[in-house]
Image (cartoon, rainbow, N blue to C red):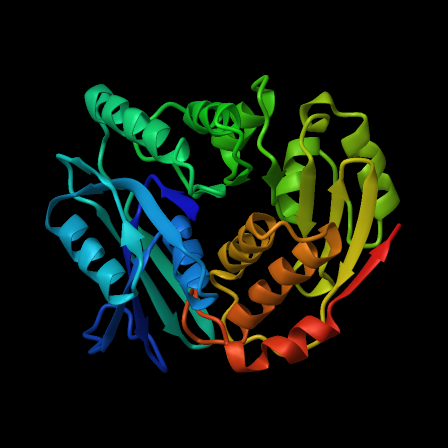
Length: 313
């Protein structure tokens, strides 16, 4: 079983418009999904027929709606109930653009967080838990070093833990003594962490910068994604360049989450490093080929998988 954590889930609502009429009425048909990065991971894992258990924080009528959508998607879930209302995030697709309105979400009390921490400790200790993913932002009231605590609990239970976050939460996790098994920053995020401006062609320079930075020393997998340029992965003492086939993207939203799902699936299956990379990048690419977020065009899996090139550097 793969345990996915979404601390700040949302009802992701998309409106498709040919043209956005500003300061006027726009009539739309809404498409609503159980969102938040960890729930995108969960939905992809279910498409891969993996056993998944989603957890995190849910509150109010919006939380009940999210639970119903997870049931619709066949996602098993065990969330901690909070007093505040779970958030709604809106994406308006118009004029070739995507304009987003993202609610901050509820404020979590210390008591609510303590209850979830105890619940997570129980879930990650289960014999059938093979792997853990921690994805997305932290809601208000949750300290920036909270993911570092969850990483510590997962590693104490001897479970591999994949961390996909950014900003202060990632900075704190990198500064903690116990590190995640895998992180998946994109090139912009890793440049921000290193205060550099590397391009996809400067892999050797990126590798040297990571090797000289103590924050990354004990992370087994550092995978830097680069969009259409693929990815570069630093796994223990080995570097890999991953090239993806040039298949046009329809909707790249959720591709990072889909990539994490592929990594988690392959790691839980005990696959070799090269195949873990192929599974992750294939899932990311298949999501980009589908207009739905966190959804794979599975009928083209073999085509994309066979087109992924993993080269040892």
